[in-house]
Amino acid sequence: MASSKRILSIDGVVHTVDHTKMNIKVETDKFGKTIKYMMFNGRHHLPAYPPSVLDQIKSVSMRPDDVFCPAFPRTGTHWLYEMVSMLLSGKAETIQESKIKHQLEFTPNEELIKLPSPRAINTHFRLSDAPEDLKEKKCKLIYNLRDPRDVAVSLYHCYIDLVYSECECSFEGFLYLFLEGKAEAGGLFHHCRDAEEYFKENPDIPVYFNIYEETLKDPVLAVQRLSDFLGLPRNDELCQAIADKCHFSNMKIDKDKFALKTDGENLLYRKGKVGDWKNYFTDQMLEDYYRVYEEKMAGSRFYKLYARNA
Image (cartoon, rainbow, N blue to C red):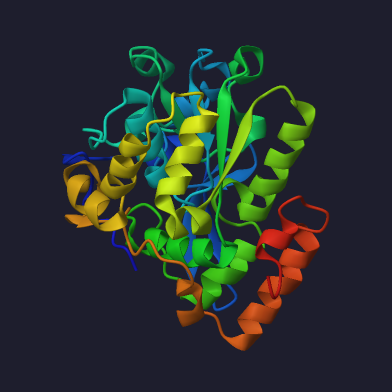
């Protein structure tokens, strides 16, 4: 269990949050263990976001050259942010700050306005909760996809290590809460279906789907495709350099001083692998997982990507 006495820091600075201003909800898993969330607009969220910042997300000022990255947690958000930021700057150099400074849940609009263009703006919120300006400015949008089983494992470890979640759950207990949608933004499946609905309603917004497993398999090709989507002149030498710089082992070292940490331990860069779920799921858990997956993702354009026996 994460003790409230442990110290959370961002960019080397102690990060504190006033929970008295949040709508805190404690969920109990089937084994009687608990995890703490904050509720916002009827959805579960990490109890670390200032409510005053969340209240203004809808009205955040966007620019036509912004690149908007709405990603469910642990789907490769930081990885994508680094690749996109390097492409936009034209340099294979580690971004000398945390991506949290470009994240809607943490950064007030008045601070986002100060960021130079072009900006890579990220969020874990659903697309239906995105800034209204996004539709008018028709910003390029990149949506992450990753095997939900690996996401569940990675998110569990993040919650276990975070001070504010006070997570007592075993992975099994957490998994069933995850499948019930009692996780960030109402759960991964709802986040994904909400995005699909947004794409359908806004067909004129350019969208690129960044698939975690494909990016890991061929990172150079992934960076090249991102470059093409962003409308940048193809520079294969730069794409190779960015792929190398954004290799997990390099990012873990280069971004260490900017990372989210508990008692000095990095929470953001854990393993960066595919298939870690196999170390956690029992046969029964896997069967229960697929039952929910098949129900929640039926009819989805992404269904076959992570379907049973895919």
